[in-house]
Structure formats: C-alpha cells, structure tokens
Length: 414
Image (cartoon, rainbow, N blue to C red; front, side, top):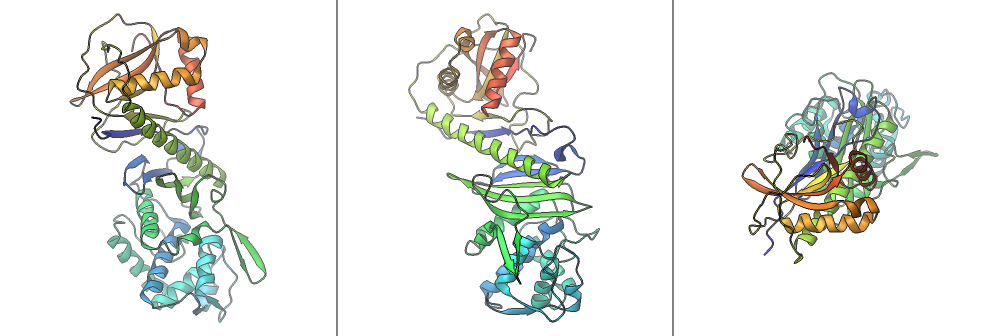
C-alpha cells in the first residue's frame, strides 16, 4: 500500500543575470498553492515593502464587499471630487463633478490602475480617503494581512504604507475565494473609456499559460511589483514579485517562478504515479559522507530560488518503503543526482523514466543507482546516474536543466 506523499521541496532558481530584479536588496518573491496553502517559494517574503498600486487590490476588495452587501450596485454612479481629480497618473483624467459607474470604476482600477478612480471609490464608500484607508487596514488585518498598513486607496507613495509579499499573496487568495463572481475582471486585457482604450499593465495575463489576474504596481520607492494567479490542471498558484528593477525583468522573474513551480508540481504527480507501480528493486547503497546542503530544513517552508544563474530544479519526496535494506558497495566517481524519494521504487522508476527520455550513449554507459540517506529520522532514496566522468556529468545536468528536470552533479569528493 502506497502511503501519502510526505513532503515537497521546491528549488526554484531564476536564470536572469546577477543585476536582475531578484538580485536587488529590496526584491521579494513568494509562490504558494492557493488550494493547499503550501509555500513553494519564499524570498524576503516577510520583509516590509511598499505595495504601490497593489494597494488597489484592497480597494477592490472593499468595493466588492460593498456590492455584495447591497450598499452599491454595478450600475450606480459615483462623483469625482476636486481631491480625486487632483491625483497624478495613472488616471482617467476625471474632472471635479464627473461621474463614473461602479463597473467602469472596477475596470479602471484593474486595467488602467487609475489613481483618481481609487479616490472616487474611497470617498463614495467612506466619505474620505483617510477614513477609507483606516477601514482598509482594519479589514486587511481581519483577512490575516498582519504586516500591512494602508494610508490611501491608490498606492501613491506614503512612507507608512507597507506590506509584505506574503500578505499580498493572502490578499490575492481572499479576492479569489470571496468574490469568484467578480474575479473575471482581473483577466481583462483592455478597458475603453471616453473614447480611449487602455491596455492592462499586467503583460502576463493572456501571454503566460494559465495566468488569469491580478495586479501590477510601481512607484520609485517600491520598484516594479506584480501579483498573479494562475490555474493549470488541478493546481492554482499565487505568485508575487516585488521590487523589480524594470517591468520586463519583474515579469520575466514571475514567469520563471510560475513555470518552475508547475514543472515541479508535475514531477511530484508523476512520482506518485510511478511509486504505485510494482517495479523490480535495485539493492541500495549508502554514501560515506552526506552533502550538507542537500535536503536541509525538511521540517518547515524553505526559502529557495535565490541563487543567481542556477537552473530551476525540484526535489520530490515520494512514498515511504519499509522493505528496503541497505548494503554497501564500492563508490564510483562522478554522478548526477535527479531526485530524492521516500521509496526505493519511486527512485528506481525515476531513473528508468529519465533513461528512456534521454536515450543517449552517455546515459547508457552510466550506472543507475538508488542510495538511502537518513534525514531527521526519515529514510530517503537518492536517484543517481553513477560512473560518469566530470564532463559527462555536467553535460547530462545541462540537458536535464534545459528540459526543466531536477539535477546536480556530484563529485567524487562529495
């Protein structure tokens, strides 16, 4: 009987240059499975950051709540004050006394990120922007955004307006969970108003597979921010990148995190399937010395993906196998490791699958081996191709990295 999957560690590494957004000191990133709550990637996720126009996600949450309470309707009109009309771009160019329907305001906030419209909404719901900001903060705390303080409705700079990447992921999850009937607005790519057509600042929507929202933001103090949600198969993810040096670098980093996360989740699903097969077993071997960096910190979420230039990779822990008994054999030279599993059968199946996928002479000459290793009271099974020279090991790992597969080369001294 195959037992439930024990754990999943993702090692998500971007291939942007060292000068890219995630290498900057103010950058932060966070990826989580919205259904399970499992954290797949975290870098500076709890460090304070300026939200910029990500603030409008909370403005929209408050507006959606008002709609569901019956306080306002999509066809209601709201009037712009002189205060609202004075807000700088991005805006719709509203003048004092102009009116805008609630549904138009939603689209203007999502697509145009209109600062004047944010103030219109705030004043319509709370009488003043400052009162609305207090209500935003109070509601955010109720939603679990414990490190977030709002000072305005638009995200224009205020030194005290702060949040974290983790809190923005929580807000995205709350929007999707609480207002599925309104979530389609976040997928809109264009918005037409008063003879002008505006394009969504979130270039990931409609371009990256599965991405269906949410919001971008930028002020000088924050750098370039983005929150996205995406759905592929059974997995819905929320991805947050904050502090990008440019919009294009921010988007590239977010896309890489999304792709690496889904690749690793697919690998986990495959490992579960393969672990259920009745496969012949290899005798395990035990390594003399454990690599200190391998599988560190199994007991909690792991901050991963901050190594510049490293390929995306994943380590999957599959199902426990109590029947395996270790024995020692002579250790060969270089090897490549393609995963660590909680059953020898799963490790064996992974090696067979990759042998068939690669299908070259280099792999044919290698020796597929499974090796037990103890980690925090658990027995894991390494899956390795052994008896390679250094150049061959590096070539195999480079090929696997290009395919999005986990791999690292192991030297004889490791």
